[in-house]
Image (cartoon, rainbow, N blue to C red; front, side):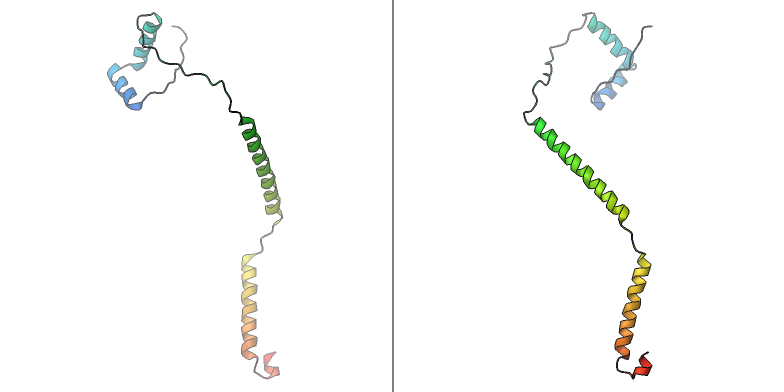
Length: 122
């Protein structure tokens, strides 16, 4: 047996399923078809070829340059953000909230006791 290769191609799923059900051994049928086609036993109607891309949009270089500049700017911003995140210390939220609550309570106590004689306020 000669060396074989696994071929991949696109086909509508419904058509492929119908073909496999009808052919029973789809690989064998496709191999026989290719052999017959190469032997000239089967001809197909002319299929228009897709023209190769020969022109490049005139502004492609400019667009690529803009993209490169944006990527460089993003890289700089990402580095700055990383440095900022590393240098920023997050205070203990419980301590901050506790200190704030304590300050509010002391202020309200002072306001409430403000009319009492000095020796009681201490």
